[in-house]
Amino acid sequence: MGKVQESVSVQELASSLGALPPEFVRSEQDQPGATTHGGVEVPVIDMSEPGCGARVAAAAREWGLFQVVNHGVPSEVIAELQRVGRDFFSLPREEKERYAMDPASGKIEGYGSKLQKDLEGKKTWNDFFFHVVAPPEKVDHAVWPDSPAGYREANEAYCAHIQRLTFEMFELLSLGLGVDKGAMAEAFGGGDLVFLQKINYYPPCPQPELTLGVAPHTDMSTVTILVPNEVQGLQVFKDGHWYDAKYVPDALIVHIGDQIEATSLSIHVQYSIIFSNGAYKAVLHRTTVNKEKTRMSWPVFVEPPGELVVGPHPQLVTDENPAKYKGKKYKDYQHCKINKLP
Image (cartoon, rainbow, N blue to C red):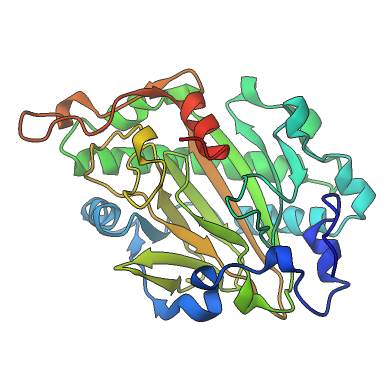
């Protein structure tokens, strides 16, 4: 089959294919069918229990990823976020295209199929829609869809809960490092923190064992808080192998991102602007797809403002543990990572 046109969404492609086009077939060492070593239960932390802070810090040190339950985000708020996301992707293509991103013109929010360059020129089995949900001065409601009804209200209601939960996480992670509970929030910009809501859409795939929904990566963010649907897909890299992170109903998934710690497996390690000076780890992860079912996820990436310089916290730098990374403006880090620049 010839090369797929850039303008064709994966969702459209999925409805017309019997086999996977070559540009979606990963190299053998990257194919989930050959490299998945079964499932693993990542830490599940009950946020209502005493001592949950110590468990959060331990999971951030050992895994860089954990799931939280009793997190205080009402199930009806999550259900409504998921409903409007599903309904958006059910719209006719022309309607979705009204919100298409256009990186060439600097429009990086919106609807699309490709965000990062792939060093091998491979594509991932994924469409997405994303936009800033906070702070208010960074929000461009022109990018938000008019349809489905209730889209704006659902996203704003969910974001308010995620903002609260993020600052709770920052407090627990700061205390776990032995610094003041407000240290992390302050270092990342406090009220200027940027919350970027994304919807990932992974339609059914004819040969899911050969491709990925998202290639292996660490998140650029400070933390990412994600709600998945019930279709298995998240994989984590642990002890040299890839494992399915088992789905837990009603849980939110928390990823530690590059701004807290950049994994030494990342080719961008020299650009890491790393608050914890190596104490916590960013999780290397990827996404698989399903032959029969559509997988969706709703990550919120919590990022410092672009002009902010982030580096190791002064209290975590000592003669015995010198600074491992120098501070860098977040927007410069972001540019290098998206464009795979050394």
